[in-house]
Image 1 (tube, rainbow over the protein chains, first blue to last red):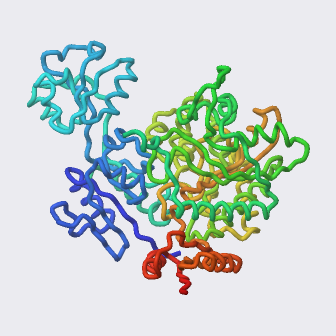
Image 2: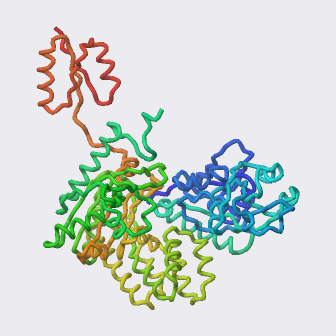
Image 3: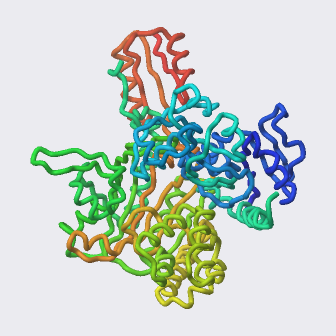
Length: 217
Length: 384
């Protein structure tokens, strides 16, 4: 059977550096991969691999539609978008967590005290599902950045956001009230590619799996 | 401006698209007929009870529902197999096996995207009253032949026997919800969550490793040898044996090049009981066809009878098909003397051409431009 190209969608931003390091260890091409570069496609004819540089939130879309066979993206994005993709490997870097955070003044509130309050978030699906599962109803206010600003300005009573160190929360007088879930970086795969390019994808998955288990990279 | 808006997920099909669609339908019905399958047509909508008793309650969220005037709840058909099971158990009980096929639109209230509309077309067939590997192999072979006939270059059909996974899950005392969760994680190949769920279970490692490997066991016969734990479970061993028999029969048909064993193919509808399969093309990120054995569906309609079948998505096939059927030459005929033009048109039509008569009395230069702007058209202009 003829050899086929493998296209991998990479998340720009904080995940890129550990991803390149991982690819280096896994023996995948990595020379020149950088988001500062002007090109958005990196083509390596030798092992027939192509990387495309995407915004993290676009990675599941590329993979679901088959424009990329594989993708590297955070679980936070996968959960929020609910796209129909296979989640193959927990790469164990890019650790962060979804939290409900409230202003310092009401840090002693219980979750149930927040019923019918307003939540500012970049993750409306995740936020809504979390509160619904608790039997609570909230008003979701969807924002696209600087979520911490919303409670300060009286736009919302709390926020749902991802945090890694918690520094941004502290700087804005916000306190983590509840953890919704943990998130790490995942390797996702298109449903059809997994079947039609199995000979290429399965060994790669196994290699990344054993590297990920070996420790943080 | 609502008066030109089309409901979300629905679409108009223009002449070029219809041509491709009809070509697929023609080839499918010719192929299905050549294996003795006869076409049936079922109603566009059914009682919700009929749909749910066949396809299960999970499908409810995807149905287009409405009321009839007597207060019954109706559903546009979300697929055709359930309707055919109902039809056969009402009208066709006497002679078995029955070979039936359909070409039909179906309706699902899903989020529309590339290759997924809310109204889409399926060609499918059902082989009723026939248990055993030769029945399964016959329909998988027809699926392969159909894709080959249509000129689809590279494609793959993944086969599995869902009894393997089900027997392994029955093997341990799990809650129904836990079984359902594991089955769904295997089906969606969510390896990360599957491993997490298994890790938290107090069950022997051999079993857990086997379950964890189901989604990634994929390939030829060697796949089966990689799951030694199965030998400990009688029902799973029987299911494996059935899978091997179908695989062997497919070898006799000469279609193994396109067949893979994939123990993670479980299909999402509730009614499947045995061998299941799905078809993929590397040119489309979504599946092309799917089907399998459903031995318990007919008994929902009071007629216990084994059955197997599949359906292929015509809209999805149309997206990956490049070659079209060869067409007769097309000819545009014009001129000043309409009686002569008309006569010439009739002659040309008789000789098998597709002929369009210029009814606007245009000149030869203008008509030549029209003919040249179209694919496969020539002009015949009758001068005085």
